[in-house]
Amino acid sequence: MKIGVLTSSRADYGIYLPLLLKLKADPFFELEIIAFGTHLSKFHGFTITEIEQNGYNVIHKISSLLSNDDEQSIATSYGLTALKFADFWQSNKYDLVFCLGDRFEMSAAVQAGIPFGVKFAHIHGGETTLGAIDNIYRHQITIASILHFTAAASFSEKITKLIGSSNGVYTVGSLSLDGIESFKPIEKVLFYDRFKIPYQEFALVTFHPETIATQLNKEYALEMRLALAQIAKKLFLVITMPNADTMGSVYRLEIEKLKNESPDRVLCIENFGRENYFSAMKYSKLLIGNTSSGILEAASFGKYVVNVGNRQEGRPQSQNTFNATFRKESIVEVTSEVSHLNDFNGENYYHQDGTAKMIIESLKKYYANI
Image 1 (tube, rainbow, N blue to C red):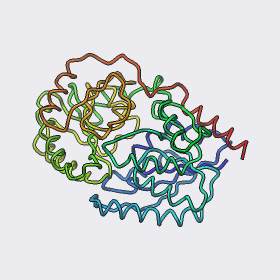
Image 2: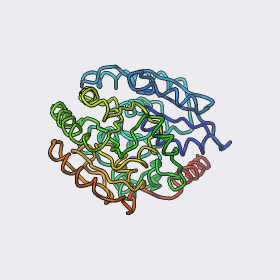
Image 3: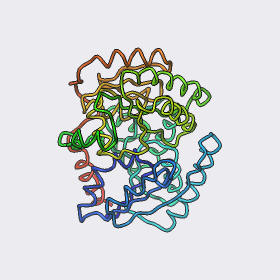
Image 4: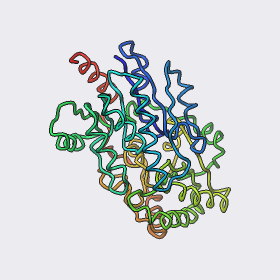
C-alpha cells in the first residue's frame, strides 16, 4: 500500500512520529514523505533536516511559503501552495495520503488534490478552535477526506454530522500521546546543559497569534511581553517561537525584545523536536501560552497550563487547564495561582492506548476493501 504523508511544520511532524515509525517498519506499506511549508524555511529552523535524519526512502520537498505573514502574504502562500501541488498530484499517485490538523498550507495542498481524486486520511479533525481561522481550514480538510482519525468521541460525532455518515470515522485518541507511558525524557542534567538552562524551575512558553482577531494581535503581543517580563523575575522562561501564522512576526518581535531586555531569564528555541519538547514539558513547572500542546498533551506529563486568550476556545479541556485573558494582569495572576500547585494527577481527555496501532489496522482493512 503506497502511503503519502503531508507534513508542513515541526508541529505536525512531531505528532505524526509514532505513526511514521510503524509505517516505516511495516513492509505492507510503501511510505513517502511530502514536506513543505515551514520545513523549508530557514527563518523557522529549516526542519527538513530533522526529517532527512530519520532515514525515509523518499522525501518530496515543495517550497511555497512567503517570508511575510500579513493577510495578503498568507492568501498568496495559499494560492502558491495549491499551484505547486497541482503539479505534484499530477505526477505522484498514492493509495492514500495522510493530512493532519488545520493549517492553511495543509488545506491548500489538500484542496489541490480534489480534482485529481486524491484519497486523503485526516488526523485531528472535528475539533473547534474559535480564536483561529484554522477552524475553517480544518473543516475544509475534513470534507475532502475519506478517512478520519479523531482524538475523542465528541469530534467523531461532529465529523459524522459534517459529512452525513459515520463511515470511515475512527476515534483513536491523540496521536502525539501514543506510547506516552513509555516515553523516557532526556536525562535532566543533560537536558539543562544542552540548552544552557539554569538549574532552577522554568515555565515552558508558546504563543501564536489569534488569526480571527488579526487587528488585535499587536495589542495582545505587547500584553504578552509585559506579562512574561514580570513572570521572568520569578520563573525562568523557555520560549518556543511562533509558527508561520498571520501576524506571527508581531509576536516574534515582542519575544525578541523580551529576550534582549532579560537575556539571563529567557531562552528562545526555534525548533525543539519531539524528544526535546516532551523533555522540556516533563521538567517544566508549568506551561503558558495558547498552543494546542497545552490542551492535548500537558495533562499526560502532570503539568498545569495557563491557557491565554481565545485561540484554543472550543476544544474540551482537561482539569489541568486554567484560562487567562490577553491582559498582563490576568496572565500574571493566573500564572501565580498555578505556580503554587503540585503536579497534576488527573486524566487526559485526549489519551487512548494504542493510537498508531489502531490507525494501522484501519488502513489495512481499508486497503482490503478497495
